[in-house]
Amino acid sequence: MNVTVFGLSLAELLALAAAVVLVLARWLPPEARRPLTLAGAAALAVSAIALAVLGIRWQLLPVLAGGAVALAFAAPSLLRWRAGRPAWRARWWLALPGSAACLALILAGAAAAWALPLPVFPKPSGAYAVGTTVVQWTDPDRAEIATSRTDDKRTVVVQLWYPAQGGPRAAQRAWYLGRTAKEAQLVARSEADYLGLPRFILDEPSRARTRSVPDAPVAGGGGRFPVVLFSPGLGGVRTQNTAWAEELASRGYVVAALDHPYDSAVVTLTDGRTIRTQVAATGDQAEDDRRAAGWTAVRAADLSFVLTQLGRLDRGEIPGLLIGRLDTRRAAATGHSLGGAAALQAARQDPRFAAVIDLDGFPRDPATRPFHQPVLALTHDVKPGEEPDYIPRLTRVLQLSTATGYRLTVPGAAHLTFTDAPLFMPPLPALIGSLGRTAGPRITAAATVAFLDATLRGESGGLTAALSRYGHLTVL
Image (cartoon, rainbow, N blue to C red; front, side):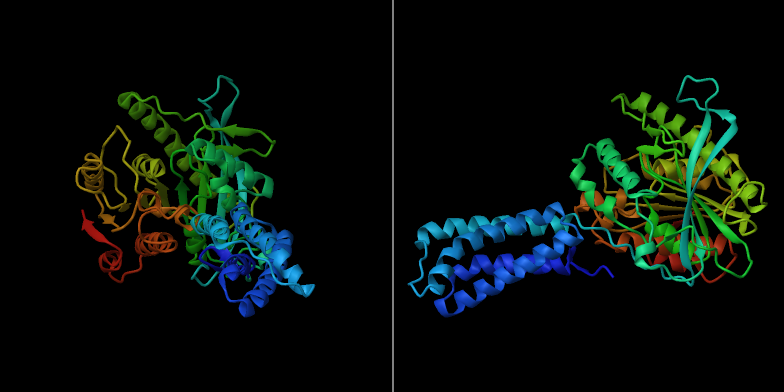
């Protein structure tokens, strides 16, 4: 079990405590200084060995370095004491800057470990364990418009999370960002490059494992599960809402999240090809809006194609784990950011979708015509004067639905609150909101489960009251 406190494992906490003791011991009376220095040295050695075995994160290197420097200055004094000679100490006006520098180094490492932790995924609360598998499907009826090859057909990579048998053991859990450690590292680096971040910012997600078991046996019982299709944000990847997907799967849904080639930061195909994003802003608002509308249309078509493939999978026309277990008549189109816009457009174009969830996505469909599915739109806390077109346009689109629409504004939320980002990104309110590490994913899952239970399963029980618990609700 991976136990962490403030983003630090037990071995890392021991290293931090030992390093601090070694720095502060210099300023204690002689009778306390020597035993504490020896204890700190022993603890630092034990923790360094443990971290070498488990894997040392770069954030801990300043902690270990600061402790080692403090120990190096303390060693001569300890050796003289062992030899029965008077202990030697540097004069205070020389030692004070050195101690301050070591302490600053140690605290900087601890702060980095706290700000950029290894993501720990919340345990799903539903009755089912969670399995996951990755498939790749090619649409023979659609050309790939991102390339010039006339024989290139549109291909998507889809990750499924589903109700599974048994409980996952830690050694079996799936990597977060890819099917293998190598793919996870590639995705992390590509996502960092796309966002313009230093690659080390996403080192921890590349090492993380989830709560899902790869290719686990499907849960027994023989019933069919409603399906929830998910499109990530612009440049995003299929795994960006894994905590949400695992919670839904534990509640008896099958979640199908898409990688959109040439749009997602990077997509690895089964033949070994790696496709990187071609998405780029031009700086011209009109041109960028035109491009966003084009990407949204391709994504909407991808969602409809995947729903078709899920139906074929259920009927046994294509191989897979979930033959006979998918209820595609109870399907929801969902997405985050541009993916939310794609979900709205897919629902207007494809009546097979029975419900829509838009996670903070600005509508991009140029054909604003009525559609017939109920919609839940979760939005971040838009400040006065900020994004003046967002809420009015979203409201107009929701009013086009002939069914009930729900717009839920979550106080303290930012755009990335509705993804896994709060689990591992720096806790800056402008970046992930002010709800903390776990509240954003928890609220996103709870609100969407309430909506899906009502719209796909027909469960009555006060949807309006349930949604109102998580923010400011407008019913349209």
